[in-house]
Length: 258
Image 1: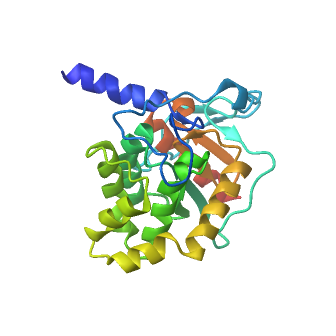
Image 2: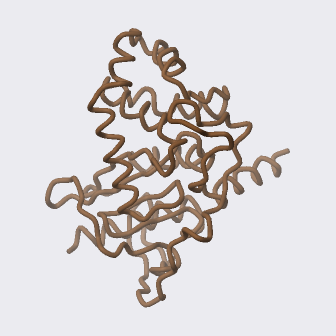
């Protein structure tokens, strides 16, 4: 049984969630399917960014979560992708933005979540952690709306992990306003406050901005991590969740030294 569980976790990482909408998705409020029905899909070949030549080869230094030196070697175009052109960031000068791009319905994102929580506890001083819900197709919009609503309500630190569990453990797709309102009631949010947040102008604007940002990052899968608007990291490309954290730390150190 233990081997089977490990195999399932490995599959969740190797098969990233791609841009294909869930079966039967037709609108923004009834599209995300329960975890029991969703199978992570590989990045569609026709939308995959072309691999860059391995012209930039670097040795990791002080890149582990604990800040220990390691001899791991990362190659641009193989373990991570260089964005061309680089994209603007939303952090103060001297800070290095690390954007965690996720979808609540993605099994790989759910499994990666505790790894990122541990990374946040010991992240490099220069790193500025940012969460960005992926709006890679209309079927993912409801979960983006829910994330931005919880942030507007000031409770995202309480609800983020709970939404993952609600979807993947309780198999509640949270794909309608009514379902989201009922879920938020468990966090002492009144129905009127929940509906106002979920349907507010600011949330609509953030959804549009998130969609544009993912497009500028040239993303076609999640989980994905974007460092300082210049580098895109995926679990499959990096090799493992631990390698993702090491690679993030390496790139943050390199950017902060510039």
